[in-house]
Every structure is written in C-alpha cells, then in structure tokens.
Image 1 (cartoon, one colour):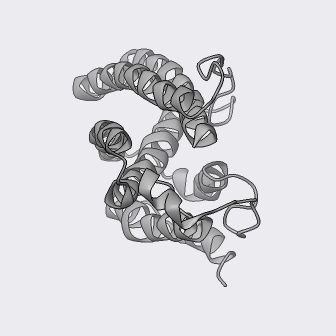
Image 2 (spheres, helix red, strand yellow):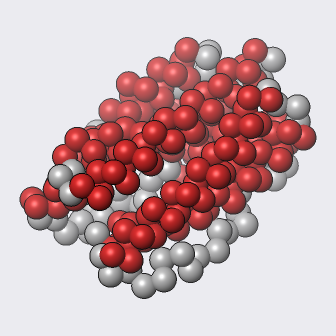
Length: 226
C-alpha cells in the first residue's frame, strides 16, 4: 500500500510539471483555447492529486513521498517539429495514459471497501476523465488540420513507454493477497487484462475514429498474446 501510493505521488509530481509545460507550449503553437486552459487546469489538478496520494502513502508507512523531482526528459524526438512533438506527447500522456488511468481507477473503485481510499479514488477518477478527454480534443483539432499521420509509426513506442518492463509478459514481481481488493489493489493478471482491454476497446477505436492507422500498435500488443 505504501509503495502504491508513493508511486502515485511521484507520478503526480511529474504530471504537474508536464502539464504546466505543455500548457505553455500549446499556447505557443496556437492550440484551441479550451485545450490550453484544460492543460493549465490539469496541472492544478495533478498538484492536488499529489497531496492526496502523499497523505495515503504516509498513512501506510512511506517516508517523505513528495521528495521527488520531475525528470527533464520529455516524450518524442528532439528533431521533430514542435507541433508534432507536442501532439505525440498529448496522445501518449492523455489519450493513452490518462485513458488507462480512468479504466484502472474505475475498477479499483469498484472493489475498494476502505472509505478513505474510495473517496480518494473518486476524486482522482473525476479529474482523470477530463484529462483523457483533453488529449482526444487536441488530437481531433490537429487531425482537422491534416496533422498526425506520423502517429501510426510511433504508436508502438508510445505503448512500450506506457508499461513497465515485464508487465505484459506477467514477469513483474507481484506479491498479492485477496484482502488487498478491499484497499483498491488489483492482482497483476487483472491489471494486464485492463490494459489490453482498454487499448483494444477505447484507445485503438478512438485513434481509428480520427483516421490514424493503428495496425502497428495492434501488432505490437499481439506480440504478448498467450
């Protein structure tokens, strides 16, 4: 439990810095005002999420969970046009990761019985839905201008970056006890199922709807079929 919420605390620290930077860059490239404001709002959301997660991490024994500095590395290739690189990042962060977080937290909330964790998950989930929609809105706007064809080729890279090594192979160490369901924890096999299902039923279909060829992403995921 301490490890889960400490990990989430670090993720929220990184997300706060990322959305702050992306909001500025979206404004620079002339993105839709609603998207720019959405990114600014998301940065504030993630800062609040950091405090929620840190409080739970400390409750379960984590020491100084907020002692983390967001890395300077960013998504995409440095030689890309700024607008394309930002689109890559928005798709990776919002359309994939935030959509995945929405599916994950929905399931965690379904099984959790601990009231403090349920309240926290509900708060996080409400914002994750908006953050996912932000990415899809930006993608739709960029596609209307004829941009984004390159996403077909980099989709496998986005997917690979969205999981820890060994996750889809089921080789990550994952100590488990049935009682952890009460605290919103899920076993590895279920986490993998959520990832695969969300990619197939939500992310791929969403990309398909914008005219992005998802065949390479589907082929990458199929490599991990049983």
